[in-house]
Image 1: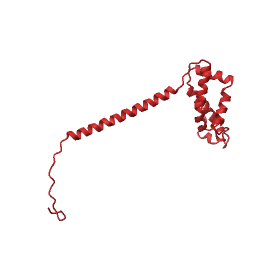
Image 2: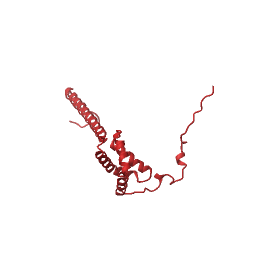
Image 3: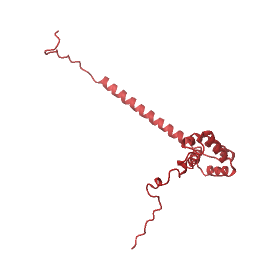
Image 4: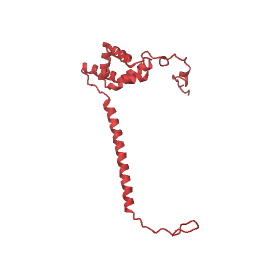
Length: 166
């Protein structure tokens, strides 16, 4: 019996290093260097009728606003439109614009901010629990020290060549 050959259709390791420098969009200088330029780019791009209808459809399918905004800005980073730091700074504007599109089309959308709030709240709760446990263990150790009876034993009289005479 002949075994079926496995066909791998993936790039070879290190293949990304063989492309000429500057051949990829993210290896070139970005098209927009300031937050204002990037915001203007997004507002003109997302305000077209086709983009607004696509965004409304995506929101109706259940994708959260923050995830969609991150996908949009990271895609622009990969295309060389702007740098990642400009993308992070434009994300709140993109989120607000997507929410505006959802409100105009009467779409019941998820913001995705609840997930961030829940993870932050959970982290704060875990920190408070750790601090509380630490305080309890410190109180227990101080109570144990109080409970233990220390018998004062008289100190031995100093003796030896260098001892002080009394």
